[in-house]
Image (tube, rainbow, N blue to C red; front, top):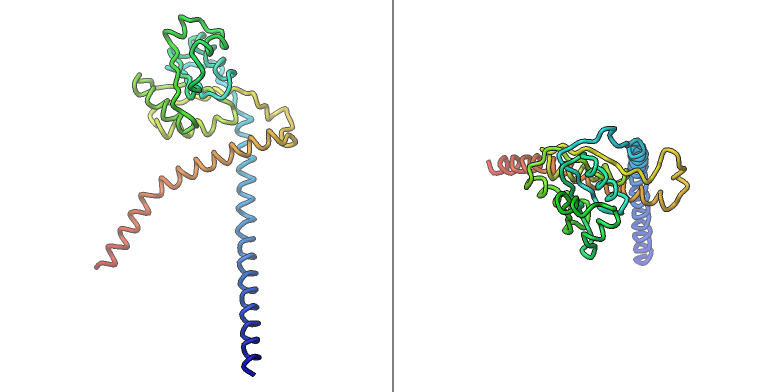
Length: 232
């Protein structure tokens, strides 16, 4: 009889465990589906925003910043400098082994132009680093408006980080459109789809940091108020 009772207890425990697991899976499913829908909708909106980015017809600012990732971006920045779109150019995030003369030769810029008006930044290793490097450069020179040159899919996150680092500065997007989402069927290109998804994920994390940062003071205030009430 004692053995039968133990067996029944074990069977009841297993049933309760399975029931709890089913509840967790069911509730997890109902949470996951809306989250997935929000992610997909946000991704499509992000892709459409990136596809619609176009350089301004008459670009003009105090200075120009290129966020490195290929000589096409640097070429565009140097061309803007030559055309007088800005007084000075910062190339941010240059690899430590890349020399000024290599950049000048690849962009076919003159020695005089590079000597007078081009700065090379080597400290940044990511977009947050680019923003910090750019912020110090802008502050030291007192610039108020900046043309930002980078890939179209990288532009939203770049502007987000730059504006966070330097909110008082006007940043004007000058996208290098080397990823054409309007005319190409990029959804069928696994490599390009992966690149856009990765960039969207990084952009989402950057936005989440902003949200958490804006809520943190409120949370501190709420917690402090509750603790004070508890001590009364």
